[in-house]
Length: 130
Length: 300
Image (tube, rainbow over all chains, first blue to last red; front, side):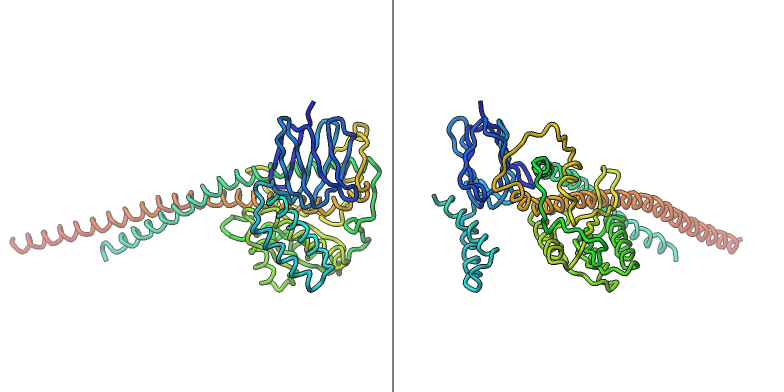
């Protein structure tokens, strides 16, 4: 039995397919993996990656800034307004965002928006390079 | 002045023909854009539906939080009005209809002694309100014919800021709802405060008995806290997409009418021109005949 995986963004369906495992990080809960038969679950996501392992072993990675994951026994839905598949990450843009966030943090090192922007930029760079 | 009237009419027909080519092109462009805008509205639906379904599950799980977006004020003093019009004209009554609906709401609230803030979306809304010396709080434009989620995000951020800091007690959203290709209407919707989660869930058609019990991380309240801002943005985005589809539908209709008018005008002008030409020919013949007869008289 496989999991039906859907990745929904406000503008379109980013991904839809069959998988055997989905891994991500929820806010406050750390890393979590979903297999078929997982108990019904709704989680709020950290700025992190979402990893979908497809039936033939192919791994698909997405960078997610924020969002939710909703799981029932046979279906995993990821909802996110800011998410990119790893292969379409724009590293130059991420680097620019990182520089900008760091500049803001030198004036106010607790600026929550800049901190979130930095984390998001770092994640994209890490995933695109690694 | 034989021939003069004819020449003037010929020139006018030429210019009407050119206008007709332009309106016809605009009509065709608008028609394809309506289709695309509708497609985008459909593509945006799953996200909004999924968010609502998560809210349903949360409500069933008994989550109820005291979120700033739910803050309800008995007699709202200051109301923010988000008026969504277009950036460009030539769209029939589209802009004026939605702007007038907005103005009516604002006037009604002022008549009760309340204060207002205008968040204008689209160049036409800003032009109208600033010309009439209304005070505009913030202004967004450049995307009304093809809005991105990013735009909804920017507007929502400003609106939340106003609402969460208590600068406004209520937010009304005024836009043009796309009912069908033939029908669009200006509507006024309560945007903030949000209805309590239970009501949102029922509006989404939740069937309490069919719900499974979920576990939540970090907690039902924590998820809801993250979710409500997203829900606000998704709603605003849906409204922007509806407004864009309505704008294109209105423009298509207006340009179709303009093309038909041009056709009628061309027929009428062509008739006038022929009459003028025949008149001038008749005059010339009369002159020739008159001249010939005069010569005959002389010879006799």
